[in-house]
Length: 184
Image (tube, rainbow, N blue to C red; front, side, top):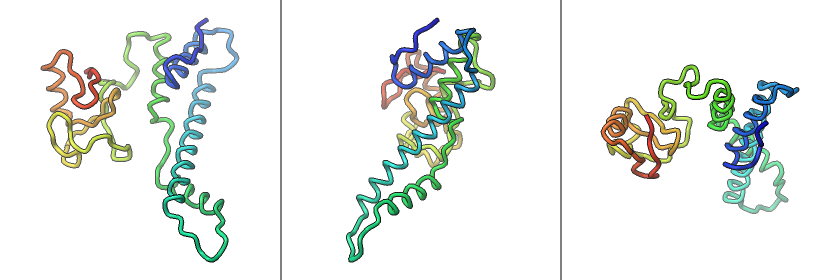
């Protein structure tokens, strides 16, 4: 049975836990139960991030008045507002993806997961925060990209045609910003 050490941070612990669970035939916890627990943890992580943002927002915008301030109400209202405007979908979180990949690799090592053609570069959406405002390769603003993709390693958004050409013509292609190796 493998060890569930803390190497590799949160992603490493999730990967190790999934390997232990799937590799242990005597386990009473199912993979689905563990996946549900990961989703619950990601929800809680999102709540913590929203609480932190709410505290920062209230601290930055607070103006004392004549009346006593109900800080609990201010924080709760700000938290509710932030949570409503930023949808949390644990199924799409990168840690959930890493967990599923680790479980998949126990029995299907070397095979791509179902539904993944290019696992290191994926289509992106405007709901994700962007690290860059221009494609690091083409220099085009992200708002003008017709086919944007996001690297799963460095998290930068690229013009698909530009990054695919860059990777194809540079055997050891690295992100021009982060210096991480780009895979195709």
